[in-house]
Length: 248
Length: 264
Image (tube, rainbow over all chains, first blue to last red; front, side, top):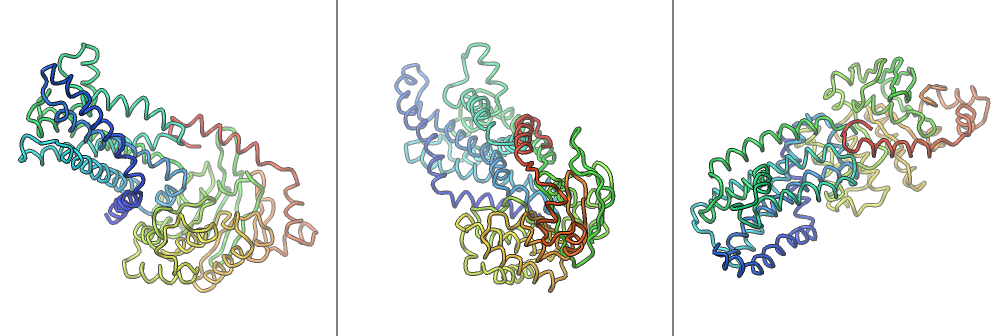
């Protein structure tokens, strides 16, 4: 238990200390929020879909959580490169505890990052429809953070060095983001695209957040919750298994 | 304290460690010498639960590292060939993290961390992030950390690589001191023969996965019929250089296994 706590704390300390990185990782979501949010607003309105800024804000918050949580898992590669991974793996502590500590730490950092974007969104003019539903949106943020932190650990355990990083970025993280409906509504899409978006876990996370914050959603919110929880649990198991197989 | 019998490790068709046997009694400083790729690190990895032997037996304080993993891990400290500190954390936090992972009770942890940081002359820098430390300071911190949970055995894999003579001297005098005061058994590897000669009680020389000689430094010199340990080392292992090939295969292997997540 202490081992989980100290590894969780380590992730948090590293996050708080890397100020340059915090600011850098805000850049991308801010760009999407402000440029797309205001840039596409008029078109969106003319198409009869309402306020685009309101629509895109939950997507951008989810984006911040997604990137931050996946990268925390891939941080395993850094630890491998700089040797710290060995220090934890040779300690008299089960791999499962180490994996849980790291994943929880990564998910917490991702949540903080998401909350930071929330604040920026509110400052820029985002207004949730129901204040009472904010805790529900937060639950979905937690689910997104845990699910993708676990996925990150699973991938980070399977890669040997940084060469695979770009590959993961271009063929996994970006598609997950773009196909999640973060930037456009998932209604009236071409058939193929419709099917693809339905297997993107982030789509359910964002849909759940939208349901809570804006009161409108594509899927049933219970379905969103079920998909996120079940898939999150599955990825935890996969991540723990892959992590237990690391050899150093 | 360490007992190795007929230990063998093969990677595919390559035999990294080929039937070696040796014993290190409690409180001894044992130097394990050999050219690059001779099987030193592979042996250390088998002794420290990181790798399963293909055959043969290993005993650490009477326990088999394969089956009593956590018990064995609690009993040794290790300083790896390459650094294993978290550069973003401070010296104190690195010690703290280690102490928690090794179940050292809170009070003992604080006291011992202070004692060790003072001994290794890092106390004044305890609040600084490790990435700001020099190579010598990092090494000292790693060794201090290795001692934190009062291990019975300390493994040092080329701990003085890249350090200046001052740091090396100081480092060994600390290790010797703790070896005497705490009766810690020390198992070390190094490429500096003068160090091994000075520090070690007994020496084993490994080459091509086989133990070429073992005994006190004096015995080994006598056996080879030369005056210095360096000459004895060269006489026993030859003077061919054999590092580059192994490095490249290593890299290739790593690349091939990038997606399998398996062993290197």
